[in-house]
Length: 343
Image (cartoon, rainbow, N blue to C red; front, side, top):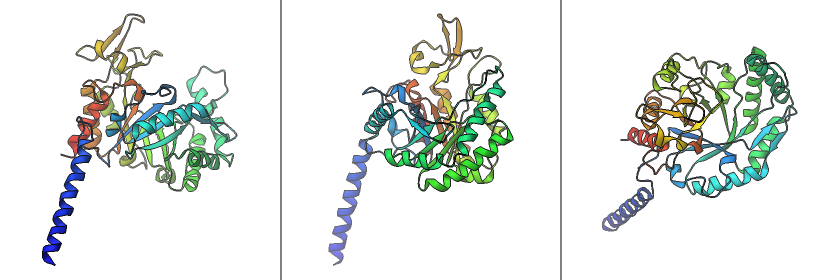
């Protein structure tokens, strides 16, 4: 009996080694193992993934979560509005690239815009909140969201309601988040925000599963966009209220804004060959200067998030990068920082 048991043990051990070797061999050479408890969240814009080959399978050895953007919204009546063809093609292409990997996909919902002729930004945001408040009070938005998640087999829902400024706007948003969470069951609830405008109540903070922190669109005194030093200083002075740090994913820009913060967004993958050794690119067409988060900056920010207890990092947006198999890829830089975490 003892001999037989030893033989069985040896067989089990051999099979375990074979399975483990096969799994590791199938992973990207650049990233040996994806960390399970540290998220790498990628916003994927539906408009950019309508063609076959617009999503790279190897990237999902690094990416753990996808937020599908610009395919769905809701109006002031609480109705969910889908761009069905765009959504379905995007989902098909993303899921094909993911394959058998355990990557979660959540649906982003944009809310209604406000109606105002004011040029004052705060008044524009208040008008937007007026329309959001109607939807939050409609009593039907929660069910309509769950119906869409059920239909398309999403893992959760996400809100990019960036700027509720008034106490009334925050009160209605918080109440809605708590109500929605009560209806979601196993679906996750994500939100986005900026470090200077966090007003979640304790109940809402408990309801939220993740906060995508938009740590970008800031230029320093030299016009550099979202530098490591500037963003870390902002994080260290931020008050996240009742949101646990392990729910927060630090945003990483895969794009640049000009030194004057004009309305230009240049994707890294379009200019990486022309960026100088200090991270600068001068655009002759616009006569503007852009400073990019290059792989070394992205890697340092990821390491900071890992070492300081954040839940992960978030990328805006997926299609601004090269395939992660390429040396200059920003996702590759994230993957290298994450893989070192486990060694």
